[in-house]
Length: 346
Image (cartoon, rainbow, N blue to C red; front, side, top):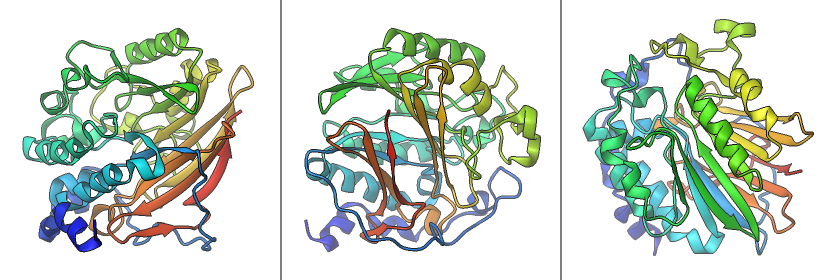
């Protein structure tokens, strides 16, 4: 498909909707803004390796669901059209699928993600803006289950199940790639104690699979884990500053209670955090395994993110992961050191 037709098919004409004051100011205090993915030095673009496979991450599309649905569509259309070329095996959402938890925005998200149906399986992760009246996280009510109920995914051979019947907020997926078995566990924003207990059981049950954990708030932009006990509000937007008070856990509690105890966990990924929206931390679990923890978020860029997405390329050696960020809107790769790097699976 030539680029002009590609943009038309993605509904790029819908870009003209103005970003509202609601999104610009957000429901959160002190929301900084940056106008570029990074100011790091540009590096040579690394080519994809034959025989590799890819997981794509779509962080915080709330601005698209609010006022730029064309940019959400262009992401998923590009992923669908390039699934075979790059061997895209899974797509991860990282929360804040909507900005205000209203049906109009969920319909836009449904329309965009449905482009992947029967082509590339994808996950659902909810963020703070996906909960409560007008997305203010006053409680855990959400329209997510009206548009992405577990029954929508039940026929997928890779869909493992959910924590609570009829609720997509906590779910897991099982798949194979390059001869290895994988598990993806997707957690609600500020997971409750019972959610962590459920995750612990899933990681134990599938201990023979390499595990990826996706949630909305975990790693901060200074590449340290959210830790309310030690850092309080010095780390902005910790789950503890939101109205919901129902056995919430932040990143450090997730690490201490569950993640570090399981040798099969190798990747944790989240969105949510602003500033430059980027962070990376490699930590040793109790069993000596390396857990690669990653923050990626582009919502503070122009137009709510300019369709930037992250691609994790798993190389044939089964231990090297090459990270790249790409915008199908501009057909451009970001090759700065924060946006193109490698890490190792041990």
